[in-house]
Length: 140
Ligand SMILES: NC(=O)c1ccc[n+]([C@@H]2O[C@H](COP(=O)([O-])OP(=O)(O)OC[C@H]3O[C@@H](n4cnc5c(N)ncnc54)[C@H](OP(=O)(O)O)[C@@H]3O)[C@@H](O)[C@H]2O)c1
Image (cartoon, rainbow, N blue to C red; front, top):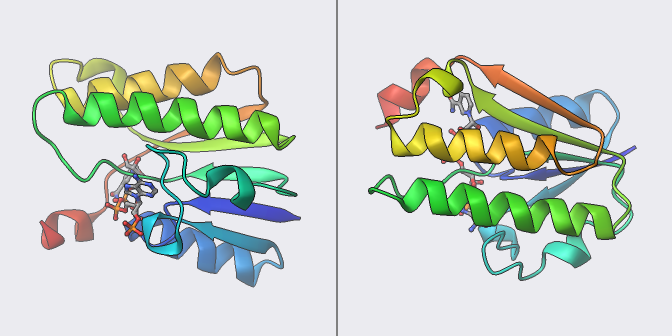
């Protein structure tokens, strides 16, 4: 099975890609450092060719007011459209526990928009709401 990890160089993506590889999946890494930009869509369609499943673990690099919301809206629309065009069979998005109760925060509004775009995409999907990990706070 070919699984694209969008955000494969990140905190979550690098660990997920490693686990998937260890379980025998063929991992297709995608992130800006591998020539894929989910905002401009540069390199995205080509990278998803022949992929069965997308694991979406991209993150907004900016947390300014409105930035994360706009990032997740554009990024998720682009990845969903590219996934549909490529015939992807399952879309997995990593979200955060409590996202629907933290809507006063721009980042979590962005995560909720991301979840809703995935849910209404028409693609079979899994939205995983995870706790945030300790090393995220150590790194910031
Ligand atoms: N970390 C946590 O504790 C945690 C917990 C629950 C949910 N999540 C969710 O998991 C996702 C990933 O979080 P993270 O902490 O792993 O993020 P991260 O470490 O900041 O990694 C972000 C990833 O997104 C990529 N990226 C950023 N902008 C991009 C763009 N325009 N086009 C393509 N790739 C782009 C980066 O690629 P380059 O490095 O190549 O630029 C990197 O691979 C987020 O949606 C977050 O809400 C995280």
